[in-house]
Structure formats: C-alpha cells, structure tokens
Length: 376
Image (tube, rainbow, N blue to C red; front, side, top):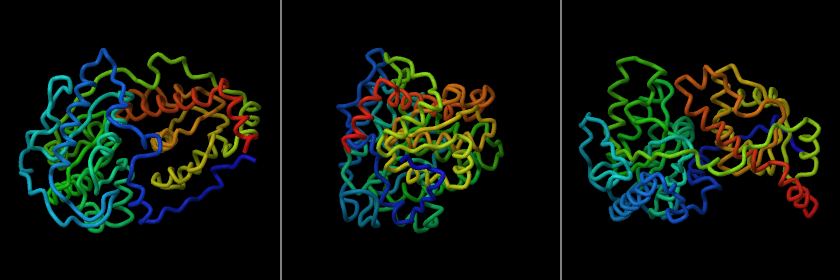
C-alpha cells in the first residue's frame, strides 16, 4: 500500500546534517571523465580541464585535518591566509578560453544556465579532491548554521580541504551577511571553496532587496571566487522525447498500488505539509520513496510555496525518484509573473528537473515498475 508523505514528520539531528554533507545519490559515481560535454559548446570542455587544475591545486595544498572523508574535525594545518581585501569582484573566465579556475583565489564559481551539468562538475570536483571535504546545497549549509550555531559551524567546517556548495543563492539580507561571514572565516582557515549558481556572485540577491548596506557583503562574496562561465542548452532534454502528458487520477492510483515504495499524495495537501516543515527536512521526507505519485497539480500563486516546491524538486532529483502526476503539466506549475521575476532561474530549474523525472516515470517503464514490485 502506498505511503502518504503528509503522514511523515522527519526529524533531522544536527549530527545527521554534518554527516550528510556529501554528494546526493544521483551523483555518487560521477567523475570528470563521465561528464558529456556538448561538442558545440567549448566552454563545457574547458570547464572540465579548468576544474581538474583547480582540484590539483587544492589537493597539493598539504595535509589538513584528521580523517579522509566528509566534514568533521578542526584543521591541524592551514594553507595560509589570502588577501580578501580586494573588492574588484571575481575574475570572469570563459571556461573555453583557458581559465586556470582560480589562480590564487581560494574559490571557483561555476556560472551558467540550468541543465549544463554544473552539479555534475561540482560533484566530480569533490570526488577528485582528497578529504576532509564537504558537499552541500546552499539550503543545507544555512540549515547547518541554524542547527549548530555559527561558531560550531565554523569549528566543524574549518578543518576542511574543500567545501562545495550547490545551488548557491541569496534571497534575503540575513543570508547575505550569514554566508559572507561564514565563507570569510573558512577562507581565513585555509578552506578552498567551490560553488554553482545561475547567477554571477556580484549579482546574488539582485531583485530581492536593494539596501545599500548589503552591497559590501555581496561584493565581498564575489572577491573570493574566480568564475567559470559554462554555456549550453539543458542536457536533461537534449535529444530526448518530450515528458509525458499528465496522467489520469485513476492511473496515478493504479501505479501507486503496484509500485514498491510508492508515495501517493494530493498536491494541495502536500503543499500545506511542506509549509509546516523546514526545507532542510525535505530530503528525509522523500528518502526511500520508489515512485512519487501526485494528484491534482495546479499552478502555484504563492511565491513562498513556489520556492518550497523548488527545494522539493531538487531533493527528488538528487535521489533520482521518478514522478507521475495528474493535473496541470509541470511547465505550467509557476505563473508567468514568477518566470519573469527574480527567482525565474530557480523555477526554470525545477520545471526542468520535474519534467525529467516525469519522463523517468512515464508509461513506457510501467512494466518494469510492476515487475519490480511483484518480484519483491
């Protein structure tokens, strides 16, 4: 019998947040050699080479702290302090133009549209660098600070050789000050940084708030990174058929009943449930789900709810959980105003990822899912 996610109330302990700072399951096995660049986009080929050089530079920086895996422990040695007083912004390099991915700067920043493989490359960089190291989304890093407190987070992460941050974004002034201060402390401790986003570092927060008091903080973030610009179209749909049309409610119910590990929820009820959970719990919410079944998808008018759905889409995609849904198609999930607003790239990423997962859950795979359920 399928389980309802609205009946799940996951609790995530602070120690679990630290232990979870590794690439998500979808990216367990990715490496630079498994990245498939678009032959028509030289910046993608260049990014692989540039990040390889950055990995070599990080790896050659000397022994950091005890351990060789994920986050944990203070550093016993430091790489040496770097001059962070510059406010000229990060150096921009087209990855196809021979960037050395940072030169002397402590961080590298992968900028580009959604679906060009930035997360694949970030995870590949993490795999290429010896530990201690950590990998997390922006939400996971800020949630860690909320759970541990700022001082304990600095203590937990300052012994790292590399901190990789995916989906880097600043949506409010509090996040701006928090992340800028955290990264400053970590860089001073000798930690190298790598991040992905669809926005140049100096443009983070643009369109969300305009207070001059925060401009210095945003520029400070920019000064810590060299920028690799990666161009290209969304690989998740390159040369592939369109995602299937929404299913009927009867089909959703049938699929949920025959699929091992399926969840089944109404869209409105699930949205209300998400509003009662911190986004840092969304990963635990969908852990062990074999098929995500959703009834009655409708367009979302509330921006806060839309941003929660973005996080949910990311956690489903991280775990490669196929999706079947009824109601409106995912390309109509967000309003035209939202897709034209300051969060448009987040919403576009969510549409891309949900559409890819809907293709994975399409009817062509029904026999496979039924056979899997019966075999178990």
